[in-house]
Amino acid sequence: MFNLDLLVNALTTILVTIDPPGLAPIFLSLTAGMTRSERFQVASRGSLIAFLILSAFALFGNGILGLLGISFGAFRIAGGLLLFWIAFEMIFEKRNERKEKTGETAVTLDHIRNLAVFPLALPLIAGPGAISATILLSGSFSSTFDRFQLIVVLAFCVAILFAFLVIAERIDRFLGATGRAILTRLLGVILAALAVQFVVDGVKLAFFA
Image (cartoon, rainbow, N blue to C red; front, side, top):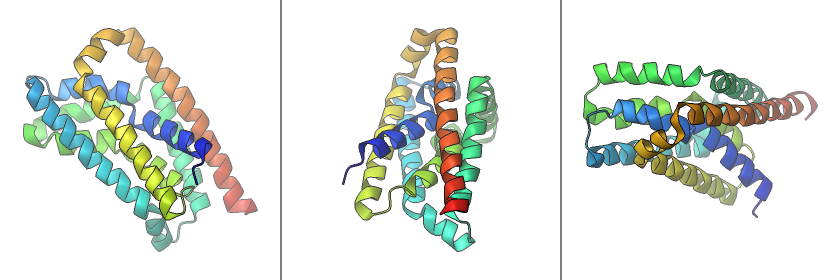
């Protein structure tokens, strides 16, 4: 049945790792010179592709780990450390710099119509952090019904991200540089706490299960 704590944890983790407020200004820079209609198309296609990628990892991530001989406890520890590094970057303003560099490179290498696939869907939305978080969370959603709940959470998070991309220009004007910095750091602290919890759970699974 429904586990509210688990659903809230999943919702928070996915939202923080895909970071809609932080991605909005980067999306604007990627789509500079585009019309509102063209931006909408890029945002919708990129969000859909990212959702399909994350859903695939939610459904088959544990199977992939089993084939590779990696225990779930070990992956929880590794994933938690990776998420903690992302949180560190968010708190100290490193993540957006890296994302902006990725965006600038992509604009010169790929045609504008492919922006939805690269770098928007991969690696800006469905990046290493979001993929790791999805696989970690999938271990707590074991039954078919539980996995369906995780897919719904992913869909909800991507829908929120899509809304942020659609109104990216307004959000950027509203938040300003100071607002973005405060929000990113706050989300980074939350993600750091979640990452530590992943590591603690992983240690328990690996050594005390």
